[in-house]
Length: 319
Length: 319
Image 1 (cartoon, rainbow over the protein chains, first blue to last red):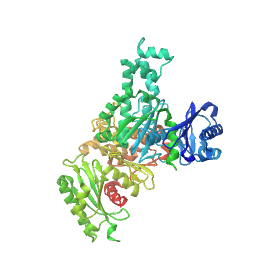
Image 2: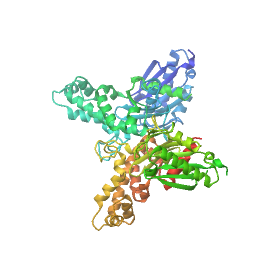
Image 3: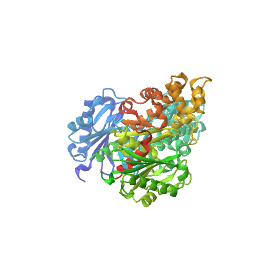
Image 4: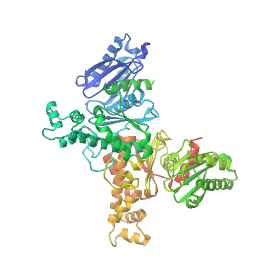
């Protein structure tokens, strides 16, 4: 294997920064995980990531400058073409940081960046559940709903790199409050806050949700997921409701984009078996028929490695 | 001017079929209008349109086969790449008609087709209010809300040619009933039926809306528009409400597509001065800020000629 076969992918999260060494077939050979809290400032981040990349490269006997490149997925709006992080939602101190240039100078190899939702979609398209799709939408379900749009196999970024804010698609003036300050966003119906709200309403003293929450110390989507898989009717209704809203939002997306594939990942997607059936029923009932039959709607396959792999794929796709 | 400078554009509507001879700068040199009722069947349509195209070409001294081509915008889902009309919403008897091939054979020149909403967007982008845009969304407001999406200057059609059903974007389970059978579609909030419903609620005996409706013989969006322009407060509130819903739907579109331009046309857009201010306020309040500032939102400029011109532009863009 030639030295340039190795790529480094960086998953820059609010809690951890995961740096992975990725082989040419999308295998993650080694990873390093660092706490975001220790590397909050841009210069510390650049030093930490360049150091981890060099160490990973050294572990397979090559210098960092012989890597195919370093890709970084950042949790906020990114000007990918110019390599600039505009700002980060949960990490203060990042304002128009030319991260690609800084990291390239420090590491000695080519660096490319994009926002994490775009890279989620790109990774699943090239290496995961979206392989072979022409027009694919990637969704990550968690605290928020992230969206990445791939048209003709390329990330669609819009006029100012701000496309894909699928979590903030809405078409109603009421509805639950969203983190963005609006009401009725897609994210406000299917994000973690909505799941917990429904879970609290469904919780009965002595019921499965209450028992599992007590054991866990608090109510989490995972707790409600476990209760549902254990057969608890109240928990299953929670996921049914989330699945219905997911299906309603997906129906809009299918009508507008007519994609051939939608890949859904993120932590909440671990409850696929609980929300999937209601989601599919809602899509079938609510999307226009051509749009509904065009699209396969599937669970992501890359799991925890999605961030690292998506960032590595960006390096490949921009060569 | 060489003979091949002339193009024929066909606007296939539910009431009329308009055939126009279009010069190289987008000037409509002559038109023929035929009743759709008389040319309902595909073979009659092909004969009628080929005959009109030949007559128009003869009027400038060239044979039909010397035209750059004939473009047709059809009111329903079209497989543009293969030149097939899948079906028409308001014209029975059209099921998978290979219109481009039939019309090319009958007329002796190249024929291309697409659905009318896509061609609306294409025409405004090349010749009208969308000139210079990179990513543009075209909306036509009328009985329904038609949508055409142009990304990097090309019509985005999706996996099966069904993309752009912006009128059926929704994210709520209640809301007014839509013609498609669902509830709460964008179209159900801003289409003609919604305008008339609000107009009926706002109508007071002796008020401007009631007087103008009596003179007209019935309530129409145009009547409510006239009452608003005459300063009637109730009519202005109707358009304010429509503008707010338009802005809510546009905010979703901006968040998802981040276009640099949205062009709005169709008959209802004649009330631009009445609904425009509320629409813009809603967009500013509800779209994410980068998305809102990226996009200019403008009224279409092609008016009645939009259908003919969009169809002619398709001929040019596919050369």
